[in-house]
Image (cartoon, rainbow, N blue to C red; front, side):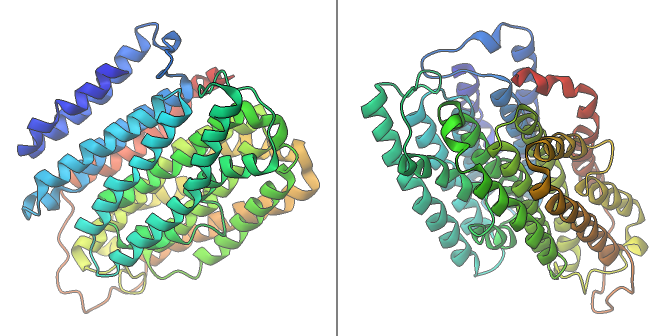
Amino acid sequence: MMKFFISFIFLIPLIINWWIFVLCMMSLFFLFTYLSFTSSYFSNISSMFGCDILSYSLISLTYWILFLMVMASYKIYMNNNNFMEFLFIIIILGMSLLLTFSSDNLLIFYISFESSLIPTLFLILGWGYQPERLLAGYYLLFYTLTASLPLLLGIFYIMFMSNSLSFWLISMNINFWLYISLILAFLFKMPMVFVHFWLPKAHVEAPISGSMILAAILLKLGGYGLFRVFMFIDSYSLNYSYFIVGVSLFGSFMVGILCLYQSDMKSLIAYSSVSHMGMVISGIFIFNIYGLIGSLIVMIGHAFCSSGLFCLANLVYERSHSRSLYINKGLITFMPNLSLLWFLLCANNMSSPPSLNLLGEIYIINSLISWNSSMSFPFLSLILFFSCCYSIYLYSSTQHGSFYKGVITMSSVNIREYFLIVLHWIPLNFLIMKFDLFSYYL
């Protein structure tokens, strides 16, 4: 893994040229993919770093999203808004995420897991739009740090009792307080319903790059952490799976209703992320192999879908200077080509074929109904119904209706922006032809 870590360091001199940096970020993705598939990389597990299919999927996703978020932030370069500092923060964020997803040591994982918070906070505070971004930064900081301090204490306890911090070698008896300390930080990060209040605030105040990395990668850190700690607490977690799955399913249903009350595009997309992550938490906590595979697939599919929707919302915001669904109406009149991409991503958000979301939710629904059909079936039906409702609501509110007369001009969409949205849609719908790759997690 060190060669990929060093490659980020060698990107630092390239921050003086925006487009060379973008090309190098894209090249790193293809280099990682090529080297991982043409060597015995999956067996190269050391005492500190290693990579299985879970790590490989999320590292590849990180490279892809970092490349797209730099492309989406072209306005920072055009306005000369401290773009070299912006690219440097992207490099630091990429290095911390690479360490997080490739670490086999629980303490190194914790350090890199928490260090990814600092660049994200700088993105929100430095390039956010409104003065309220300070409050959003406080919410992000204190929610995640409050939950992660018990995790640090739990790691020290494991080191004292097990004499090892490797995910593969930890073997010990789990008690209730250790169990809570290990999962609490990841539930706050995903986030689980009722501890999700930092997420809509952070999304609304973040720049497009911050929203993309939050929705696509940072929420998946929680899922990745749950996958890893469940390697040694799986049997104990079954004692409390009924409670956590029940809260997650009920919360996903309630958040789905809440999406229909939103008037801000970014807020609606952020709440839909909370609803989707509730299903992912349910799939993980029943510890069924179909649930685990489905959760991984939904995490990857949701990353492309929500990041693409945030890009579309940002394209509209850059032209009308408003995110309100009441002002941004009738966009099909002004940007008819873009309305097709709006439709495709909104349809993928409601898990239409052939998206990865559909495949992952089939796995999760199958595992939940086989686990406890009487509890899960009513909630799953309502979650899927309201998922369709708020996706249709988002599309119809933006594309149809009378356009607000207060917006004087509306410029057309350029090639870079079309390319940006298409690069979200293509992997979201074509990776389903390679879904056997995810079964390697077995």
